[in-house]
Length: 130
Length: 240
Image 1 (cartoon, one colour):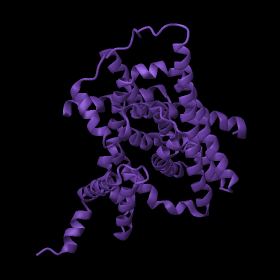
Image 2 (cartoon, chains in turn yellow, purple; image 1 turned 120 degrees about the horizontal axis):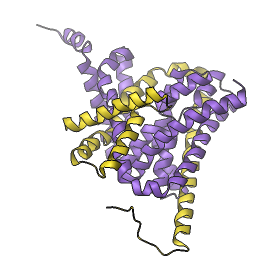
Image 3 (cartoon, chains in turn purple, green; image 1 turned 30 degrees about the horizontal axis):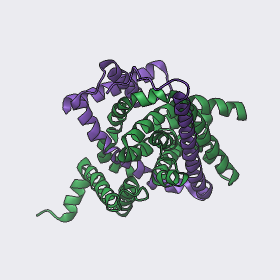
Image 4 (cartoon, chains in turn cyan, brown; image 1 turned 180 degrees about the vertical axis):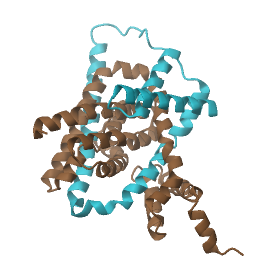
């Protein structure tokens, strides 16, 4: 557990360094995610201990947003008389974004899989590993 | 003999109290969420926050004092974000197959999020500070604050919008997607991650592994796309 937690922390650190060094507009932990992803592709699999440690963190991912969230509610006062445009915008814009993104993605994937099945017979995918 | 008040003074100076409070509040929120059969409207983050804020206000505890304890939980966001590589890796074949669909949907979603947030706030009479700080509301916090700084908004206001957007998406995303009849888990996850970053991803992971993987991917890609597109678009339309 501690060894695989170390791996995650080291990848986060590497991500922070990469993010700072390249001035990429991506947070360090997200760079760390990309680096770990590349490492897994090279390694061709997920070590069992890493899978367990990651699962432990990710099943409780929503807990990790609670401290930052509590800060938000305490500063509600700064919304002032703008609460209506802000509240309406948060709800409507978030719903619109979810609807547009999901509908487009579902439509494009359906179109892609439809045309792939069209002309050539379903050949076994070379890169499809179990 | 030590009085209760002395014990309280001792405890409130130690980070343990607020760390424990954070964990217990979340357990309470999660218990309600599970009791309501994981209905997204009973979002455990929101319930935990409401409990905590009530306690902090009643006990006149400053957020700084609270955060000394809560920072240990907050810190784990970093390694947890790195860990999102694992569900993503498990879906690598699917992601590769739909790379073009992911890219197109993500960019359109990213533009929709920023443009609609700014427009709606402006149309309804929000102040300049409000609508400028709204542009990056769907982006994960550190990048969102950076974008707002570049386009002349208030980064702390953006941090607040980001959290509220996350909770909104986590609560209303699933009912909306069900109403629209979208059953494709990849599409549902991608939408949750694009619109509601990590909090949307957390909800997606609780429901389905494919959705969780695509949500994590969308959160990362949206940070990149927004950081490139929002400042550029802003300078194009508003000339600085």
